[in-house]
Length: 94
Image (cartoon, rainbow, N blue to C red; front, top):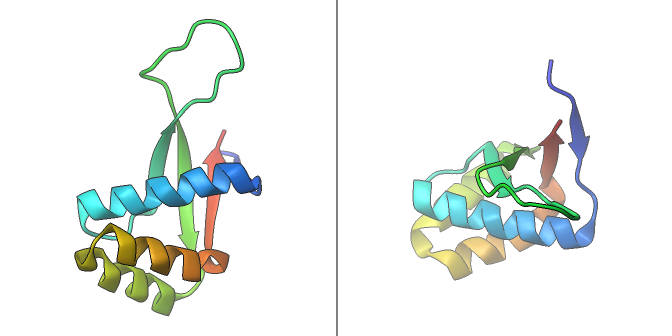
């Protein structure tokens, strides 16, 4: 079983909300898993290694609202994500 850690850092969450929006716009549906470049604090960086994050939305109506905003574009989807951010959680897989 894969261990997961809930992301609570505000700066990381801002990046994850943005990545979530971008992935939803490209794939045209609300996604449950997203990838981000791995954070490296020093040394060589492997660009092909990414961290995986589970996306959990705790309310089906919120998921429907996000899905409905995808065709409206990035500004509308971004606003919906910000409005419902308390219902969207990210968990980094270890």
